[in-house]
Image (cartoon, rainbow, N blue to C red):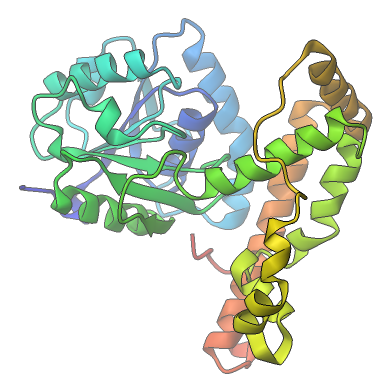
Length: 335
């Protein structure tokens, strides 16, 4: 497969520019690329430009690439026009399998050879999305996390028809544009991080439904508890440390039997009207009058602060603890 050099890619095609797709547009613009966007919604351009305006202060604070321009995006109503001349495509259409299949076929018909397509899908496999393609080799999953312009992680995985070179290229490409990449060895429904999030989400809904915890208590249990350990050491390393000097081996040997304790209920509870209203009411109470825009701004400021601290810690470790010689909080981000 004849794939472009990363430095030769100057224009990105973004297909679907809702919350996730729009976040991708903001990220690409901040990295100095020109973006051609397509979305059939009549108000897509207005919403996209509002999202970019909201994201740009955070991106500016993190550090913009040379030539980064929030206005270097055009929104097109014709898909072929939007894909003309692009060097990479990020697809972020709604999670509708029939829609994805039909859209992929349209992308394939309009796109020049050798251009890789990454899908932002959060649940579908590339194998099941690619059924209408003549040659699915260059189509891969590039699953981001919200907001894509701030959260570094992208999970990359190909389908049964994806070319191994395209998967390798996509992983390298996402790293090239500042992302932290997990290249999965095989397709798993929901990928990795979403499956872990989903388990916690289902248990949270069970506790709310049973009156065992409030919405605010659930959030505090993470932000004031294990969430503080996770930015640098994930759940597996956390449990390794819980084993003391014996580490994970002791943890598994000592606490392994408790895995059979009926603590968690991974089956999803029925989303009744009552449960839905209790969750919404709990969020309204926790938000304390802050709008979604207010909460997004607070979230973005917090993520920037956390990322800078993580960068400083990693820089210190890389310099043997000599913090003054490492990249400071004001330096460019790793991702």
